[in-house]
Image (cartoon, rainbow, N blue to C red; front, side):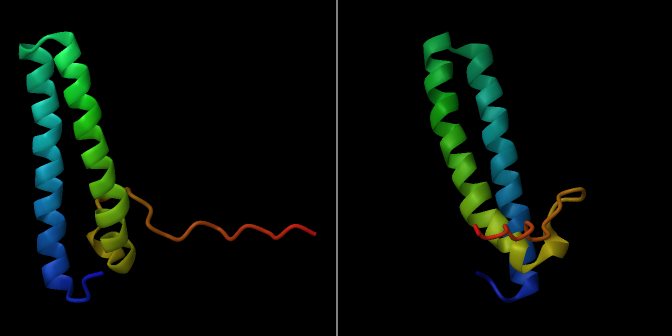
Length: 84
């Protein structure tokens, strides 16, 4: 995805900041808005956060495992055995 480790590190940091801010925005809406507004906002924001993690950050961290947050195992999953 991004071969340059320094650029990848900066992108990873920025996107983690974005996801933290998105999470905080969910808490803000929960505290200050009606329940139906909160649920709609949480659903949409959750989809966006999921996309960032699965399709962007995960791919970045697979290419540069040293950039993954501490404790997050980025080793490839074991290969499934084929049907016989």
